[in-house]
Length: 138
Ligand SMILES: Cc1cc2nc3c(=O)[nH]c(=O)nc-3n(C[C@H](O)[C@H](O)[C@H](O)COP(=O)(O)O)c2cc1C
Image (cartoon, rainbow, N blue to C red; front, side, top):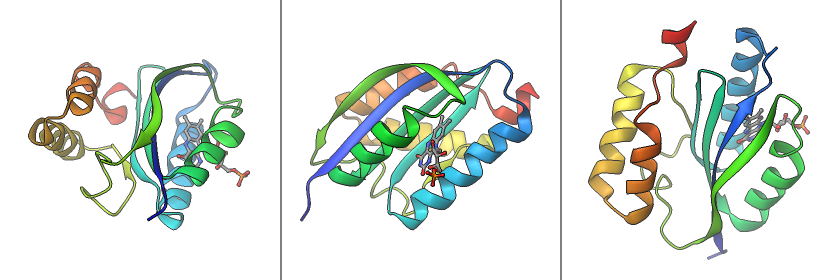
């Protein structure tokens, strides 16, 4: 099996980003990540993105370094972690990359993180606590 890698970060969306542009980020991300077997989640809340990506090391690092990090739609990326993993948090949860948009989605992620109970999932649960949904802040 190829080595797996996981990256988690929070960033600031560019202040001038419109709702339509945020939707576009969601669309491209879910389309590409499902095509390339990247698992994880992407959330937007009150001017911040929160993302977890997990998958094949080479692809994840390339995606992060050459696309996500240089994307002008966000800035001040704060990395929570960026490391090799043998135990992906989301890989077995859902074969699809999750764009968290509904209350049920958010609850599903929180329940999942609560149930897996690793130190990583505890950290993620704490990070997700203040997150409300995109639709609620429009
Ligand atoms: C916050 C944020 C997260 C993103 N996450 C991903 C992602 O997980 N996968 C992805 O393919 N593109 C993601 N993108 C979009 C990429 O930066 C890039 O625009 C997209 O992959 C298309 O690249 P291409 O035009 O070179 O094919 C993200 C963009 C932003 C602003």
